[in-house]
Image 1 (spheres, rainbow, N blue to C red):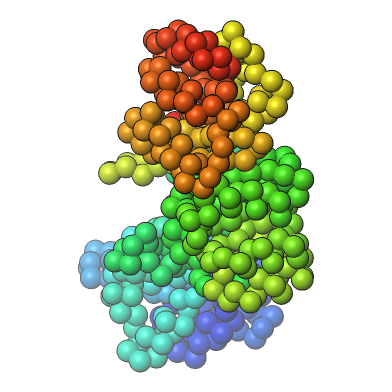
Image 2 (spheres, rainbow, N blue to C red):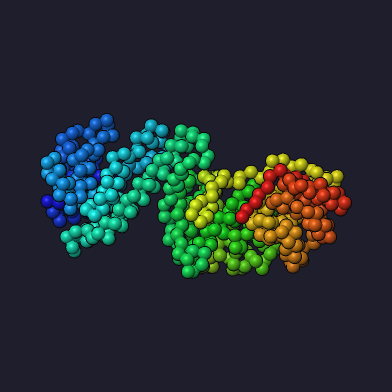
Length: 513
């Protein structure tokens, strides 16, 4: 008689699976909790302790760690010496294994104390999973309830699980234990207050959230993965897609960029993003007015863009949003009337963002060929605001400069943004020289009829030469905010003094590549 071992904390589908195995003539072995559950539902089962001849000890910490279990899992059925040793030690081979591990993730998320968290670190389960996966030629290891039906179907049709399926299940099992161990190491590092920011070895648990239609381009495949330990913060896992077409790879990138920028502002704010760069940002007394101001910056680029606001979308704003073609609208909440209005745009993706007010958890990760660059997230705006020119900024100019610096922090480098009355007038991102970025911003502002007299500019890194100041002075720009730190800072300061322009150093740059 063939033998199956079942030990699960998640009981989804396990009764049907076990019944099918019994009907196919399998003897079922199980640990105490699962054994009790199966018996209560009329399924005959042998407890692990009956096989090992040893009781569960240490409050169940030790029950399956025994040669009579692991011998049955690891024996090579085509190795005569292995078979001989099984016979000598009265060990029966185990052919099917269904295991899912202690609910560590759920225990952490319910706010359990460290003792309960540690007790939910599975030891015997991963050992059996890995043993079974190692011996994939002879053992089918199922760690995901969604695979039960596939295994039963093959057993019914062929009398055995195919080698290709066993290989697939083996790989899935090793991924599962790696994911589990990654969660454990990350949680314990936090709970034990291990202050090692960049450890020698690092595991990042990721779970597939969504299969995307394609990646950045139609010829690229793509999927969205989430870190289950980060969804208690501001996370894509807490986005609710209320209506519209399926979110694309680029939609996710652009919406995340828009939301991270709009979260910089305490007052009602709107950000419009196109191709992962803001094309309009504004604050106002309400989000409708903020949207209208942001849209004025560059209505041409806003077509087909992503809109994010940091307040509830109401009827007034919803009516405005339906006037042009947009890909995504994202906000902390929407009124019922607003959703009804937005539903007239059936393809418009409407995204409700839960945990909006919480911080993003974890490091910033960037993929490079064959590796990963990891850094702290860019959370701080400036060290100090130091006036370095003879001309001092007015209070209003200072407010606009801080606003502008929040925006430029989120632009691709090199970047310059022009702002007046807490509204972007011109945005110049991603140029190879800073003066080119400024020229782009001015060109954009002029294209849509803005008078730049009295406006301010922000740069995410220092001005290497005075040429940008010379250029800015021609258009009535009256204040500059930048990190400082160039060997030619004095040259740039002198240029500002020459034109009566106020300049503030922040002492903190914000490169974004």
